[in-house]
Length: 308
Image (cartoon, rainbow, N blue to C red; front, side, top):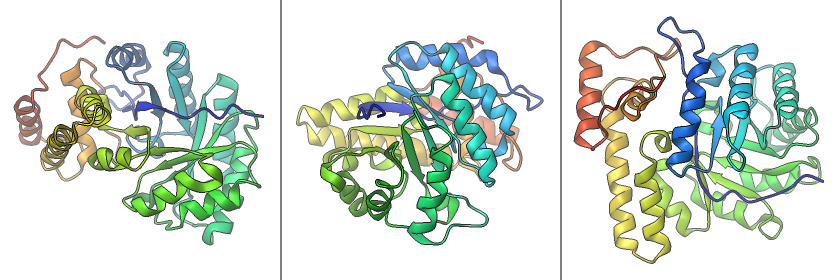
């Protein structure tokens, strides 16, 4: 039996640090992990969308996972995303994560040739989870990227008997009705990690206690204050802080055609230079970089001494 322990607090979705030439910069991960721990972040969701996992090779993803697990302190939970277009790649990544001691693995739906309905998705996830039989398995629901639209509550109901290690879902979607149903499946058995930073307060009010987000990398204090206000009953303050977070996200995303390059640049303002993005994402132009820096300064996220 695997340990099914609910996730409480913020789990950052780390950027993958790269050199100026686009190679892995693994030495940045130790200081990165330390920064997140110091900021009160509960864990890391490695090589997901924010980490450009799909743009990395299998070998690179394994190196990134190894380093995060090596440099993270006890109690800091590391989830490794293992989704890929090829089942053999996902299984290899799952087995490797298990061997490294991952606290959980997550897998998005295949996104080019897609599974047929919930039944097809269950079979895919079962095959991936079977490669890491001792590790909690999470389905990573992100239909905006995969195009796979299913009822996640139905997935949990049908996958539970099929996947012994099924622990929960990383729910990155705006269908909060489906999310609430997920929270109730099998008496609330499953760990639901919410993945829309812009709606964190709503999700918390509906019962979610764990969240995974890219903004938690460079603005964790904002989200911790938001949740603290909500939990002490100061809903007005929580709403205002959520509005501040939305403005930060919208302002950064508006600096260049793709939001991830702007978000990744924001980490330098927290002392961790994660380098450029991988193609097909485009590096910010000089003008766009200046706009990003101005937005960060306006939101009180100022450039700090780099520690790597």
